[in-house]
Image (cartoon, rainbow over all chains, first blue to last red; front, side, top):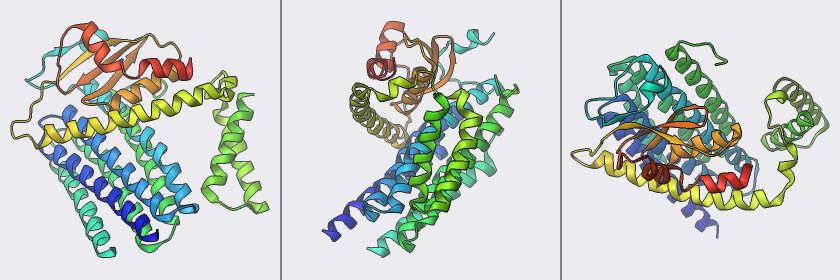
Length: 111
Length: 88
Length: 161
């Protein structure tokens, strides 16, 4: 039983680290700021949540598991709201959408 | 089992150097801010893995405080980019 | 009423974080929650009675599973775009009209859109959401509105409104 708990937690942590790896490859490879932010914030947020779920499985019912349980919603809302603010700031700063861009409705809205 | 956890910890730490690359070499200022934001989230994962290795729970407290501080920092920098007042 | 609810919620959060029931800890938590609720009470949700209806929690649990499934799909999508040698991207910002009214519901919808495949919300002006899409699959407003908000809007309407 104890061994089973260990294995589940290790699996969750491995999946999380793999997602983080994908997000960091996205930061390196994608061509402009918007797409980098998009790929990185999704992959890294889910990866770190998965690591925290692994921590919950490892500690069982104790104070550390409660702390990890509280950290998950804070991480979720924090990173999504930060990504939203950052992409809005990037647009107002004047970075263009790139030459592959096909549609831009926001330009008329902020005039 | 703990050997494997060690390897995962080293992978997670070396991922943050990719963000450092983006912070140093980013072509524009928003690119650097993306690097800082993602770096802040990755450190929480490092804190979680260290708390499993040492078996202490206070490291998760450091992680929670780190999320909130990085969130506030990113919001401030993003507001600085838009150039408006904070309550708009 | 708003202030009292925020006080109770922050007290529960404090007890879960510290995880001990001594008198000194309870007094410190009460003082901290009091200061918190005095400062931020006016920003809390206005209709507190909705927190006590069990029907909303039932829909919230279903919404959580739908959201988790979309989130995993989003990560597979990110992996496909990042690892593909040619990187199939076709970015654009589209405008989506929503029928949700309250601020809390709009916030939850924008946060859900940020975690779904290929989309991230840029701004909310009145009842229009502006969404950056990594691969614009269609340029017809009716089609992409159903594609982006269709999965979440009905659940959020049942949870909050």
